[in-house]
Image (tube, rainbow, N blue to C red; front, side, top):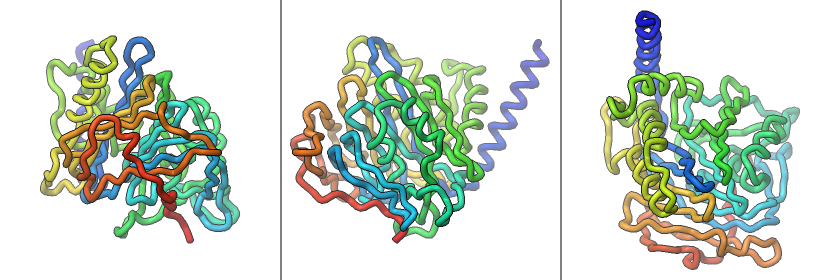
Length: 358
């Protein structure tokens, strides 16, 4: 048995080292997402947004009934929003994070290994990657409902360059809901891969999710109270978040649980302004979101402001008839300061336009 364990450990160490070498050669941005499963149905999802420059994020309230296009030219998917949502944008041309009134949360993180299907006029209707998360928020109330629909592949993801850069947007998507269910959606070698299970609580960046799970199994053998990897690499952040999200107390008090979750996502964050020689994939954490699924409170925390604030979905008019598009201006580098319940600080606005093929 000793030799078997030793062999397995050696294999996992080799996999870990190999993945670190590969990961160190990629020019991806870094983020972390985790789901806390607490008592009394207390489910909390947290994510960090790590990016090398200002991602020009603002928050939007989007009511039900909005007509949307996949923004992929004549062969675009079209739909009407069944659910209202609150979203965090990227460059005000994409939904990069968000929640809907049913309690479904989506997070989009960088995955350099992503390869999307070829798209042309004979393909299934196109959906710009900028609206991938919004499509899920608009149409589904639960992770299972979303997975059942996505497995039928109703669209073809269409990607384009990151605004202002000469590289394609390569993302994977996570979903979580009020029941604690979770799913990860990736496109590997042109094929959609869905990992659907309540146990998939953590997602970071490279390598692909299957390999992240294998790497994490090595650290589970060692045990988080003995040693945890401390670098900013995605695989190390995955191991730390996986350990801590299940090590924190399962507190009955939702505010204490929220504090614990914030401490875990901060632990997996990259210090603001940091640069790492020969590691272009490591970027500063710009902001964090935390969603209390049970109380439907969407928290936002910028690295450049002293306060954490929240949006109360229960107090928003999402109706088709009287609901309005509203925007919370977060400022350059998200440096505008809000405090407490900021739902009232949103202002009427025009909908942002999803970046697509025009």
